[in-house]
Length: 159
Length: 135
Image (cartoon, rainbow over all chains, first blue to last red):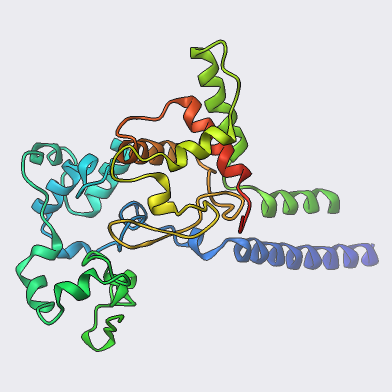
């Protein structure tokens, strides 16, 4: 009897260790992108351009952007209503109100006063250069833009 | 018991995230095409290639995805890098029906100025599946 219960105990320990090992293996097998699922805003808006920090426009302006996604600065960026509502919530926009704002022209971050001031030493030619292409391409000069890093000292304007 | 545990572990580790494949999506669109036309001949990679380069307005598919769907593209307006469109070069592509529909809706509207038909979608997927890297 003693021997059998001893075996059972060892058995239990081995199985506990195996379970812990497998649980770790399962967690390790999940790629980081899945472990930290990007938000609807980061995933949808970040597919075509830097997922601009949401503070760069006011919720009322985001509401206009969301209401006109089917003609978003010259391209069709439409979303199904469920996804659009998820993005709206992240932008501080009431999903129910956003469709009321369709008549207005969508505001551009690059036309805001602070943006022009911060970039007044960058020429139109530099913004249009092949490596940059557009003022919307934050990453061309701000390598950490996707991580909301816009520190002036780390700016590198490509030539 | 050991076998059961091994089986459970295998299932746990190998479970695929999504059930759609490029082939299943292509078959789905082909079936839709067949319901509207009895003479539908099935997906055509050659027709897909023609559609990929067709440019009735400002842009074709190739404008952002390059002439080579296995290559990394670049957004025509924002300049952001776009991973290869062909599943041959990018296994993440064409694995989610809703995502595929979202992009067909947007991009057919931006390039052709109209929605793509199910037959055209099947043709495009056939073309992307037949793309050869570096060719």
